[in-house]
Image 1 (tube, rainbow, N blue to C red):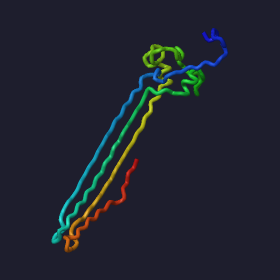
Image 2 (image 1 turned 30 degrees about the horizontal axis):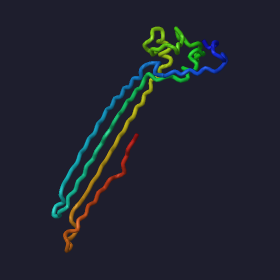
Image 3 (image 1 turned 180 degrees about the vertical axis):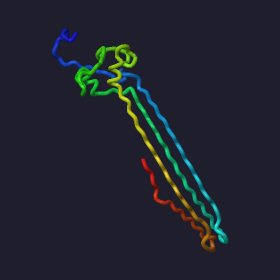
Image 4 (image 1 turned 120 degrees about the vertical axis):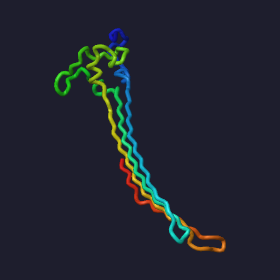
Length: 158
């Protein structure tokens, strides 16, 4: 077929979608834990109030994606692997319309070209906060009030 072109030696462009390797499958698992503890009170003999709370949270995420193409494998599926000749019974046929994973005789090619990516993520958060508020003194226009809040340095680990 290539020899019948006006210029049989002209370059040939070939496009191959990696979706032909197999369907892309996604898997995501999350484990989430959040705790919150707080106290609230009044300062005796004053109109002052206080609040203190602490919070701890943790999220574990696991993500997997398969059906992705191994690009180097697409370039040279017929060449030798690290341990000798690749064993791809039936060879690699880029012209079949169906995905490799569902084509009889193409299981070895699918296993060779398919890649599964995994990502594990762990997030933790710890917060402790306190506040104090109340009146300081009386002024002609009303009471002078204050509010103090303390947030210690945060530790967030990704």
